[in-house]
Image 1: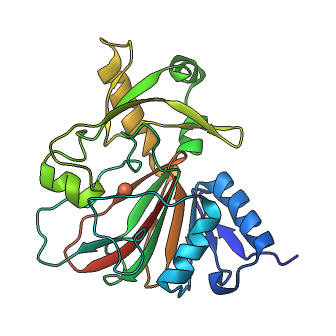
Image 2 (image 1 turned 45 degrees about the vertical axis):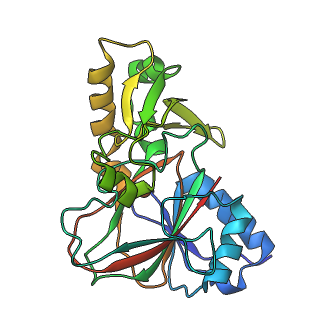
Length: 265
Ligand SMILES: [Fe+2]
């Protein structure tokens, strides 16, 4: 059995993997899946996967999801290109903590992002917030309170205040609001997480007067420093995260960046 090389971040928010994905074996994929369940986000460093190899690797984790409003790769329809140019001032690219497409009935389970063209070090990081750790740090009375509550998730939540931003960020249609309800506490491999996307949650079912306070309490709790890690991209790096156990946010910068995204149902 060929083990993979890995090392968690100092605060156990995510895990670095150094094994060459061009040569990854079946038993190693199983080990990667276990690490993904445990840490919520994996950072594959020093990689150079072609689009085809990237697609093949991601297919080990499920079926690719479609994002009709984002530009697909010219040869691979399930790889979406997220491109930002120096001239794109004033646009949002997922800045603000969220979990991808949580307003859908069945949000994509995993997201892959591959760095194709990135700015110099320290710019264009993605921040990840581990929601296992956030859940575990809640007081017992709050855990009990949210256990059976459902959030109302909207495509017109705070992260996407205008049509242009929605299209740029997550490719949803500009005019039609998409809404879904999901439990605020979910579990992955028997471990509980907070599932409350601050960019999308607009209310809590049957909790009229208290909902605002609870959402704002959770939103600030979920992104505390103890649960967060700012990942700096280098060309070729791939991040893979579970949308059930992580929040993420892009950071603002001015420059060019090109990423290939695959989401998995
Ligand atoms: Fe996102």
